[in-house]
Image (cartoon, rainbow, N blue to C red; front, side, top):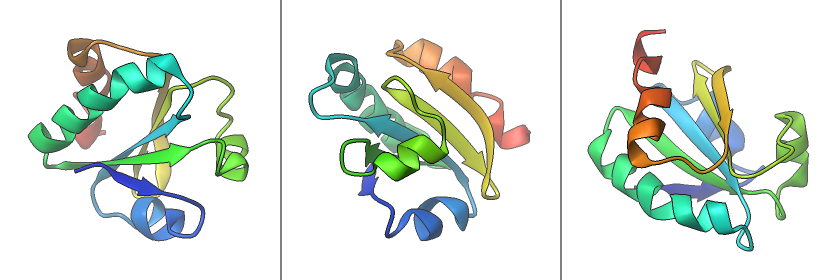
Length: 106
């Protein structure tokens, strides 16, 4: 399940998380973001070892700025509270899986 979060629960849901967390920085008006939504939902059900969260950049500009999100969708991957990977743009499910495939081991 994908959780929508903001600055109030970012620390708890992302920084303090025990598992790898993929943060989807998106906006409601963004076409590529809307294209990625069903893929993220599918992956969240399939990849139980990875936590997926979404952050609306319009509602959380300070988080977007903090993680240098200049275009959307941007996906920032955290492990143990640290950014371990970041990638930008709409991707196929297969390409998205390639991006996150080896992150549990890093």
